[in-house]
Every structure is written in structure tokens, then in C-alpha cells.
Length: 283
Image 1 (cartoon, one colour):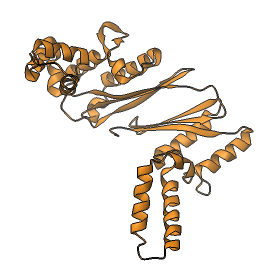
Image 2: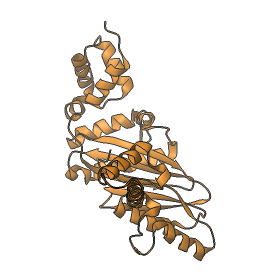
Image 3: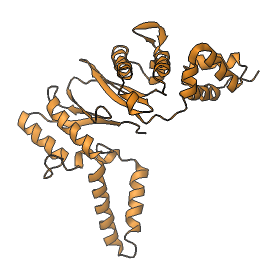
Image 4: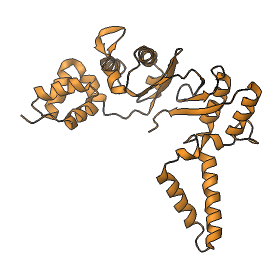
């Protein structure tokens, strides 16, 4: 019998959507034969899921849930918007968020192996497979993140396009300023920043922008080239960094300046600790 490797288990998991442990068991029973392992899983009652797992999932919904100490954001995908708007699909995502809020899993992989709180006889991943069989489409729980709230922070949540775009902004400095945090979340949804501030831009991204800028000013004196390149990099930072973007509701100020004005009004220093901007199908 062939040795059962992690790559084989991963491949079977990707093909079928079945839990890693079950994939390993199927490969052992099939003596390492991938196609026979697929048949083992199909015979175990997961045929519909296996048949549809390879289909592309471009539609779906993103949902958040929170309590006093925790915030959860999750994305579930389907093949069509028709299924994504189905009540059973929505209930599945709601159940995912509710359970993750209670169990606070360390990873999506761990979460999928948890027993479903409404039916302990199945795991979350098996619940997903049952949904595939019921709705007739490939359904994936694509990503899940558990955020642990800071006592000195406010959290603004903005959902756009019926849950196809969701933004969370964590505002440090006060625990009662959700309104300001949501204003910045709405700006983030519209303006699509890639980073919070310039020092978060990866070196290779900055280097690429500098290379492009220099290629556009060839033949000019070196001292002028440096000034032009510096100006182009500054413009790039203003485009991709949240705190340096022009605030969408008042373009006379940046997001950072808007925040400073808000801080002055409430008498507390405020800063953006981080943000999450999730869009359906985003890599």
C-alpha cells in the first residue's frame, strides 16, 4: 500500500470538501488510490457533495456577530446568488457565526471539525455537506476570523450590498465611539485602502512603485528625478493608505485629520488600530 501523505489528504479534501480526518480514513481504506477514495466517500453518503465540490463559488455572503468581548466575521460562498439568498444558506452562515462566537476557534480548519451545536452527531463540515446536497450547489465556508476586543477600543461595522462587502474598523482610545468608527468603516468600503499607514506597505510593493516612477522620468537630472520619484511615492501612499486618503464626506481633510477633529470634540486621543475589508470572492 502507498504511504498516505499530507498532500494526498489535502488533494482529496480539495476535491471533495470532506473533513481531513475522513479523507485520511478513505485513503487508508482505498490503499492510497485517489479515485477509489473518492468512491469510498461517495458510498458513505457524501456523493452530492463530492460531485459539486469542484465548481467555482463566486457568490455568497459575509456576516458578523459580536458580544461584549468578541467579534466574529465569516464568509460563505455558493455558485449562484440565487442560492446565496436562500434562507437555508443564510441560516447556515448565521449558525456558523453564532457557534464561532461561543467557541472562539483558533482556525477555520479547527472550526470545521467542531460538532454542530444544534446537532452534536455531525460536524460543521458535515453540516455544510448536507447543505450542498439540499441546495444542489457547491458551498464553501471560505474564511472565518475571531477578533478579541480591546477594552479601550470602539468597533464600527458597515455592511454593504446586502452582505457582499463588510468592513470593520477598530478605533483605539475610547470604548463608546462606535459612530465615528462606523463613519470610517463606510469610507473604507468606498475607497478600498490596502494598508492602514505607509510603514505597512511591503518593501517589494514600494520598490515596484519606485521602479515604475523612475522609468517615467528617465533622462532628467538626478536631483530632479529624486524629487519626482518622492512625489509619486507620496501620491501612491495617499491612494492606498487609509489614514492619508481624502475623507470621502469632506475631501478638504484626510481620514487622519477627520479623526483628529473628532478627538478634539470628545476630548480623547483617537487612532485607528486596524481595519478589515472583506469582499465576496476576494483573495
